[in-house]
Length: 221
Image (cartoon, rainbow, N blue to C red; front, side):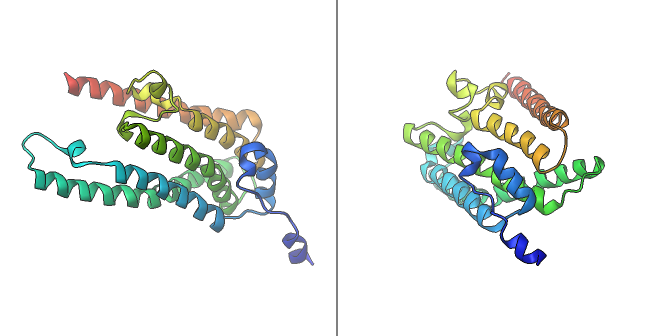
């Protein structure tokens, strides 16, 4: 009877993450799903990275003293690496985030499984995937390099390659808010603790971006 009752629990919807994330997180808590959402997220990222790979040219990778043949070989390797990254990057990101969140909820002594958190992060990654595909498609359309930062970031808005401005990006902020909500709904942490955790990780990211910018400036000198 319990299995029948569980089977009647409605599953979360990927599109629901856009307009009703709280409801989806409640469903994930009761009925976590992984494979189909993970496939959709992976396809989104593969499509995004393929766009970037196809828009690469040998001229973009040409270094002083490099022959045309060497540039073409480097281009082929770069395209293959970029395409593979589209497949592997989201899976590893979801796995890493879920592991960190699992450690946190266990320290807080909450009854939350790794599967629930993996499902939560997979659904959140749907928003990240949309943002990645949208940005890469726009970049390819207007001829902007992916190394220049996302169009939907402050860096893209002000045409500035600063890693600090790049950290303030629309879909990243959206994802952080969803992560805090997910830790509260799925991880059973308080709202305050959930947002504090997300803010701490954002500050760490911001600090790393600052260090990266300083290092780039020193190298430029």
